[in-house]
Amino acid sequence: MATISTHSTPTGDPPGKHGWERYAHAPHYRTAADEFDACKLGFWLFLTTEVLLFAGLFVSYAIFRMLYPESFAAGSHLLDWRFGFTNTVVLLVSSFTVAMAIRNCQKGQYGWSIINLVITILCALAFLFIKFTFEYGPKWTQGKRPGSLFDYPFSTTPNEPLWWSVYYCATGIHALHVVIGMGLLTWCLVRQIRSRQYGPGHYTMVEMSGLYWHLVDLIWIFLFPLLYLVH
Image 1: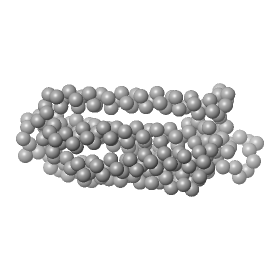
Image 2: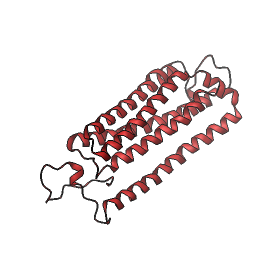
Image 3: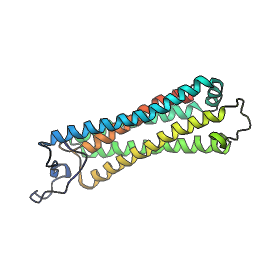
Image 4: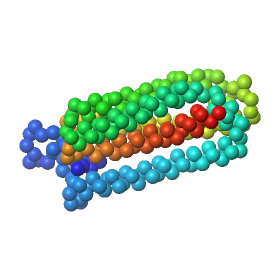
């Protein structure tokens, strides 16, 4: 097994070993398996706090949609569902490839683990490119902005700025999580390329990054219909 944290190579290790073979678990754990279980439990607890964060957004969405259904329908009508659907497919593909990267590390498939990590990172970049280039950019220039910044001349409902506030808040926080997840996966990729840091005996950082990425994917699966398919 493995742990999220890494330690320097023990002095007595033979030269030429891969990074995961040189790994030594922290001294306050009995075995590497105990360390792995503790890290995984801790990360699941962290993910619950992330769920609580987005739960607040979903509750706000439900309340405002109940109060101003016409504004939410009008605002959603101005979103292009094709971009949202494309990003959904991109994230689903990335969830598969990150799961395969974890499996590759468990089986010692060094080359395939790198390939799948690269594909996952490219999917994250594609998601952000679509979001900022084809959605945020045009909407912002057209005046579809949140709150007091709203300046869309063809608005049909008085509370449409509230809709755009919810839209930018939910998708913006989600995009930030995409960036964070991409950073974690890039860190795993660099270490894997440099020293084959992850293998059958040490892959927890990859698995924890994969769990985080699955959460990012799951949140978007909820955001896509709530924002793009309301109308």
